Length: 242
Image (tube, rainbow, N blue to C red; front, side, top):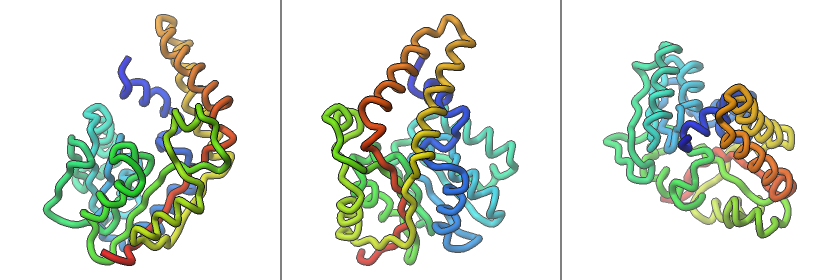
C-alpha cells in the first residue's frame, strides 16, 4: 500500500490533514480571505480540503491548488463536483515549490506542507512569489511546546519553540494579523482519528496486517516520543517588506 492510500485511510474521519478542528478552519479562512471575490492558492493542497471549504462559503471566490499526488487531486476534483464548485477550482499536478502562475493571489495557503519546501521560511518565500499587493498568507507548521526528545526531533525535524518561530517569521518581513495554536484536544483528536481509522480499516480487511502494524507503530511514536512536546500553529500573515 502506497503513502497516498495510507493517508486517505488515516484521514477518513479527520479530513483536514492537520490538527485543527472545523471551527478553527472556518475562522482561519474568514481571517485569511480578504474579500468575497478573492483568488486563493493552496501550495500542497492534497485533497483540496481548505479550498473546498472556502469555495463552499464564498460563491464568488476562485481557487487553485497544487500538489504532487495525482490521487489526492482526483479526490479533490470529485469532491468539488459533488459540491458544485468545480468551475471555480483549478488544480495543478506538480511540485508546489516549482509552481509558476501567470497571475497573483489574494490569499496563499500552505498548512502542514512545509516539508515540501524545506521548512517554514522557504514556504513563506514561495508564497511571497504568488502574493498580490496587500494579500495574505495562511501558513501552518509545527513547533516545540517543550524540550523535545531526540526521537521526536528525528521524526519531526528541527523545529523551534513558538516565540522563536514568530521571531523568525517577523524578521523575514511578515506581520501576524491572526493566529491559532492548536489545543490539546485538537492535537489528540487528530492523532486518535488517524491511527484509529487505520486500525479500524485493517480489522475490516483481515489481509492488511501491514496497516494495523503501521497504526500501532505511529500511535506508539505519538504517545511515547512527541505528544508532550509537539505543538502546531497557524498564522495569517501580511508583508511588512518585499
